[in-house]
Length: 149
Image 1 (cartoon, rainbow, N blue to C red):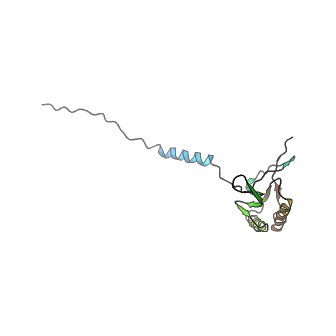
Image 2: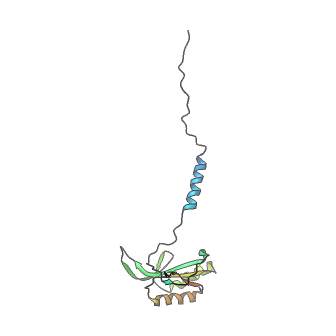
Image 3: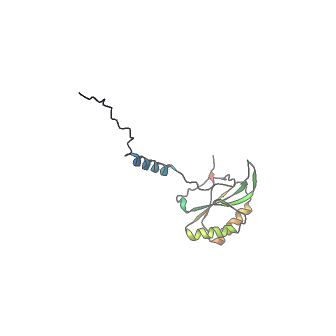
């Protein structure tokens, strides 16, 4: 007597995983290339003044920014004029000297860029310049935007 068995279709149900490391590596490279790191969260409002002759600084890594302008409060309210270096508000102008001196020790070719609100008091800018002079930070520039003609 013959015994017949029904042949079942033998198909592989596994998903090929050989290409998975390549796909993960390509995604990793994609995100590394397209991601922009956050520089600074501005806590003061800065509207740049306009100038006719401006120069672009090519080596941005040598630049340290000091922001001067009215402090942003909740909503659209603005407070008193404040100084911001990196991500922190500086309450005392004399602290600018110590911060910039430390940065100057790390990077001797440091350029300090003042980003000043166009309606900020000039007295505070003068005080910052004095502190920078005392710290030995003599390479200073002012950030502006191109004057529209």
